[in-house]
Image (spheres, one colour):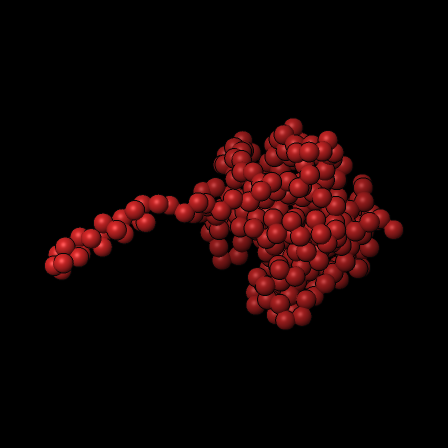
Length: 272
């Protein structure tokens, strides 16, 4: 066989392999939807994880809203592991991702912050995003799935953690369980702390808050989150059941893999 013939043979033999796509990886009991918000004027991708027995049961379930779509694989893993660990009740998990994903970092900065971010070109849209959650997304989820409207959770990290605290202060009855991991509190005397003094003296309903940060947070949020926890200790808000945890050796991003499951297990723990 000549070199030309050999090359043609190899090319022909390799072609079928190259043209046969591998099957995509799918995750059972999950769905993806898109919702358009009139409040923010933008689309959001919803990544939804349902309890394993959702389709076979007639039960209603608590809903956990998770900020940032990229957390979905971790949340699915926690959902599946919970079948065996039973550290929290089955919940409907709704991950919210900004769209388009290519501009997600800038869009989340707009949505999650009540005021413009220092030295940043975005921010300040938290009020509109909170209206979207309350008036558009939550009603859509309640219409679409068998939910328990009296049991809603909200979880966020970094700017998402800041927004979770903002939601607690602005709509203290909207979420009953909140996990705020390494919230992006840029100064000790920020708007979140000011609003806490004004709005959190007494809550209209009981709320559980898990607040956490890594001891090695490279962005300085260990200091500011600790200051916020001290503010809560000083105020002792009526109706707020909270705890604050500093995770040794964890930085701003690594803390999520410790604080997310631990925080969820704490806010969903059985009532005493």
